[in-house]
Every structure is written in structure tokens, then in C-alpha cells.
Image (cartoon, rainbow, N blue to C red; front, side, top):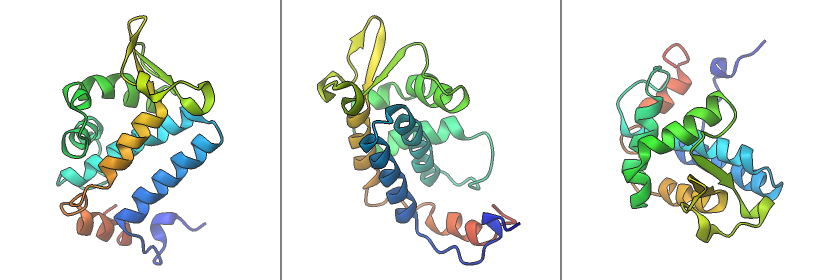
Length: 166
């Protein structure tokens, strides 16, 4: 059995990985699979955060710092920056590990529920509303930052080509 990490022909760029994530989310939105789109965006935010540190990409224990670093470095929304740990605790952590949102967050979308993006980050019944399409727009904007890959590009992709380090 051939493993992905054993392949010698892996030749992708960081931009291609980000574009793939964006394409995956667009497909999920088109299919009205909003919950799965939130999951992919959560993974994508953490992935963006890996470009802000000097740890090996496969080193465990950096999920929260990578997620919050991505928000600090690449997102422009002040609310996200002020609540980055809360977002990790209520979105990324539960959605990845328990396949559900946290108790203080309400996930919704226009594609499935016709909820307008203007309701993004509003409070309803004590929970903060996250509207998929607005979060996705913010993620796409963050991923287009000019120097996104400068700190991490060569280290990450050299590890992809050398699976003993990955």
C-alpha cells in the first residue's frame, strides 16, 4: 500500500493548499452542507496559523496557538481578535473533536437557512451567531494576505518531500 507521505511526486505550493481548502468550502456551500463547511474553515484557520510559527508542521500541541495566531496575523475583524480564544473554545475545539459546536455559539448559513450575513456575530438567546458565508469571506480575505507564506513556506514543503520529518 502506498502512503501519501511516501510519494516522491508531491509538488504543490502553499497557495495550492489554501486554494484547495477554499474550493472545498465553496463546494460544500453549493451543496448546502454548511456544518461541514464550518469544519473545513476551522481546519483552514489552524492551517493558516502554522505559517506564523517555527514549529515542525507535524509537532503536536500547537492547535490553539496556531488557530489564535492565524486570527491575530491574518484576520482584520477586531471582534475575532478580541475573542480568538473564545472562538477556539466554542468553534474549532468542539467541531473538530466532538463534531458539534460549543454551547455558546450558534452556527447558521444563508445557503441552507437563508440567514443574512448581517446577523454574523449578533447575540441570540445568549449565543453568538456565526453565519457561514461571512466567516468564509473573512477566511478568504485572510488567506490572500501577501506575506502569508514567507515564514513557513520552505520548511513546510521540504517536510512534505521528506516524510521522515513530516
